[in-house]
Length: 300
Image (cartoon, rainbow, N blue to C red; front, side):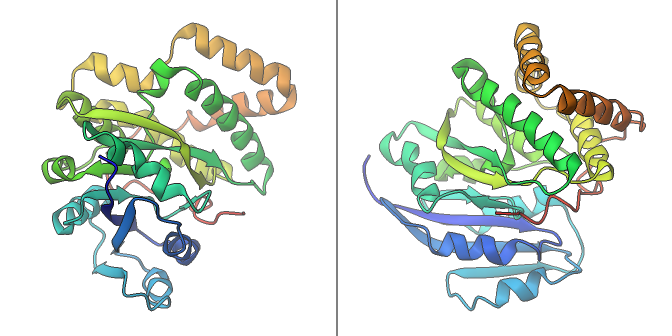
């Protein structure tokens, strides 16, 4: 296609005062090549902190703020973003992430701009510098596991993470709507698979995110992740769900072996942290499960 595409950026935000201003400033200063920014829609979803204040402090005509007095959930907020958008492309970002370079948006949208058959682009992720022992262990594991994943093209094609940001072509975001109480990133990927939407994993479009920095937050995150798979069984074939949530046993063994050899102390700490986190009874997945707080401030 090689034409300039208009883009709306949508950001659901719940108590994100620690990072929202930095994220918005970074987006406003992105270098645009083949992309024009229509607007940034920030949905403050029942925030009780300074999310609204920090957003308004930028005084940018490009930023439009939607305020929910009560928390309705991330899927509700993202459906609202899709309904309000009119651009060629919608990019959905999580409020506790940060584009790693000034070319992030250009790189994320480039597959749609260059190939009209591409309807959905998944961005890449990278951990931000941790500042606690728990954070260092989890960041080490996440980086090792992620690097192992994205080097395998077949596995990377099923990679799903809202933290990497996602770009949706106009016909896709007009048709896609999230039901309640599902993991929105996995649902979007599986919806595209079910509807024959061509997907691209864009390795060069990197967003930074923070791992949990406390055991309490890690426990919240891992139990939420563990409950996510079951919520999708009403909507998609089991085989497709398995491709999102499982890796070949040989790959898992290889990754764990690499982890053990690279840092035995961190490996044992990770195994202990994960085992302890899973002692908590599994709860049903919900849009309103308690969120980790230490992931909301990035150290960059």
